[in-house]
Length: 295
Image (cartoon, rainbow, N blue to C red; front, top):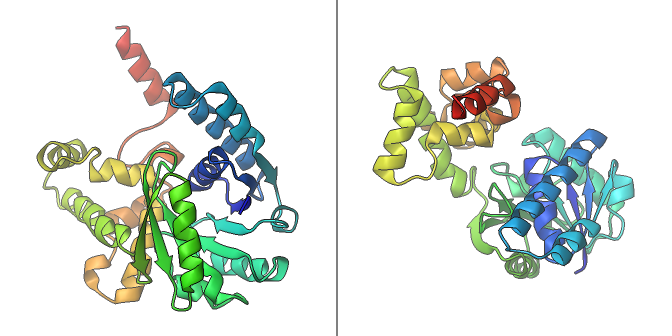
């Protein structure tokens, strides 16, 4: 397998494109937004420069990685010739089903169709395709170039051949694949999201403030990042979407999103990507931090 198409140039999509390209695959990165594609290439370049400065890669690897990536603004132009397609679009069920239905029409039946979904059923996605045996989940962790784990999720009809192929590819990327069955939230988010939701509940009930909650979890539990800061980095809108999928799937109130999370998303406070969540990431706040260093 030499050519891979990645759908979606956001945080996860550009990270997935990066690791495939750095591992020698030819990558077609597809997004309807030219600005998103330009931003993705800038992000990949910056990440490669950071690796170069730390002497984890050489100049030739950086240059070849960038040469391995081509960008496209339509599926029809971007997917031909790809032997594996990894969808990393927004965590929206209807959008993903639309994409996979279109991929069935545009690609040969031997092409493996993978989704980076963090919670949506692979079986449901596979059902709209003409090859459910070749549909599988590849749930990368953020930041993709650094995190080793890939949850490899089997749908109801996913074949052993498809699973084994994806397991082998994951290892070639330098990742650690873990086999997971198709239930809402899989493993990572089934455990992580209730913790984040409970941290929000703790804040909502006035037990402690944002920094205090995160400090307890970092210093008391050894977490590298507190749950509220982590939620900001994941995206509060993504956290809400995942919790809703789990709540709908299990019909269990323990997965019901906290009202504060719902209100913050309604207000457009998504975390890092919007400039504000539980913490302030705005340009003015960055300027204050820089000024404080020289005060």
